[in-house]
View 1 (spheres, rainbow, N blue to C red):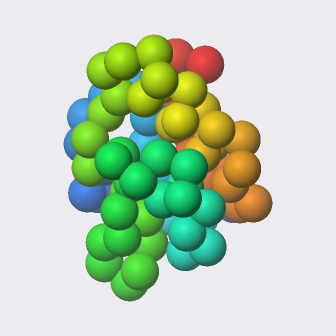
View 2 (view 1 turned 90 degrees about the vertical axis):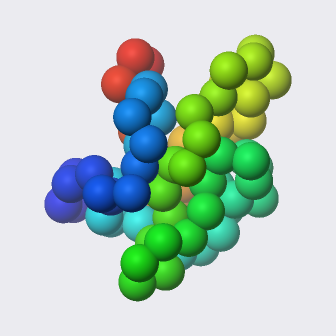
View 3 (view 1 turned 180 degrees about the horizontal axis):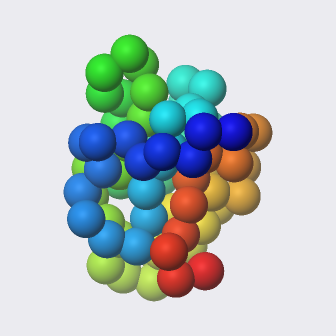
Length: 74
């Protein structure tokens, strides 16, 4: 696995690496935080701020088949 952060991730706790498979699982789990960028790879465009948003991002991370979603604090 590459592990390199997608350059379009906004700064913060959660991010997507270039290992993304473009499966849409993260966007299904947390559509207000993940979107597609260059080459169809997902990235974090808004960091969570509420407990529910954190839960959604953690759900997206747990459901990522490529383990491309990372949490710097978890």
